[in-house]
Structure formats: structure tokens, C-alpha cells
Length: 175
Image 1: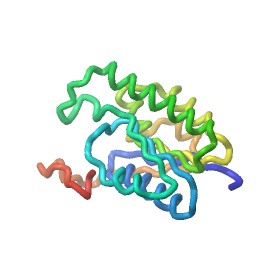
Image 2: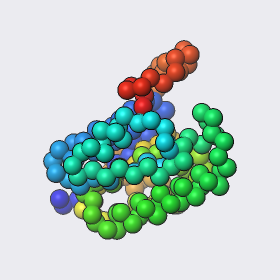
Image 3: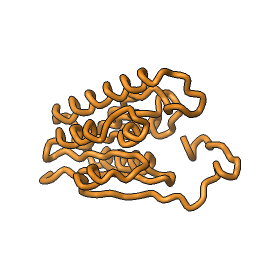
């Protein structure tokens, strides 16, 4: 592998985590070693984590303490910040180890949006990426500093969402 890419999936539409999970599956299918690390979602059920954890060559790490300030979250913000800082340290450690061909940091950009990490924290993660390693980050907002460091940025744009029609998240579709 001559050049590892920095890939960002952003937007207010659905599909960012699914795209990252698909990337992990594709990489594992070609015998690349993958780390799939989640920054925010916590122990919320996750079909993608279930499948990815069964794949040869894929390590799954759940670092977040759950969605921040929504869906009944009552944890102190300090607990979420500590978890995000631990996820950041684990991400840098994994990248520097050169053990993985692809490191996926699901919701790393969302950690910025929730004030758990700073843009500079995530820049530090990106800059710790070895040249040959691929890195993928997901989140909602366009952050120019991150986009400038990326090789590939895809934005998922919401056109219509069932939540706004009173339909709650569906198992197997949304999680």
C-alpha cells in the first residue's frame, strides 16, 4: 500500500456509520487488519458492531458512554469527556502501533460537536496516522480544518427522515 487515505463521512443524513461499517467489511474481505472504534454511541444496541466483531481481522472497541444529552442520558458531561479523551488516546496508540491497515473512528467528529473533544484533538489524531494506514472518521458537521486534511469526504444529506413523522429508530435499519 503506497498511500493510506484519510476518509471522512459527514452530514445530517443517515448512512455515515453504515458506510464506515461497509468500509470495514470491504477491508476485512481483502485481508486488511481493521480497528473499528466508536467514540459516542456507548452500549446502545448496534447491528454493525455485532457483525464486525465476528469478522476475522476486525477489532471492535466501544469507548463512548452513550449519546450525550439525549435519549435519557443522565451521565455527567465529565464522564463523557473522559471517555472521549480515552478514545482519543486509544486511537493514537492504535495508529502509532501500525498494527492496523484501517482505523475507523466512528463519531469522532461527533465528539467535537458534543464538546467532548476539540478540533485540535481530532487533528492530532489525524496527524498521528502513519503514511500507509487508512483512517476513517464520521460525524455530522463540516469542519474545514478536518476536511482540508482529508483525502476523501462524503456528505450524507437528509432529504426525509421517519423520526420527523413520529417513527422511532428501527432495529436492523437504524441500529
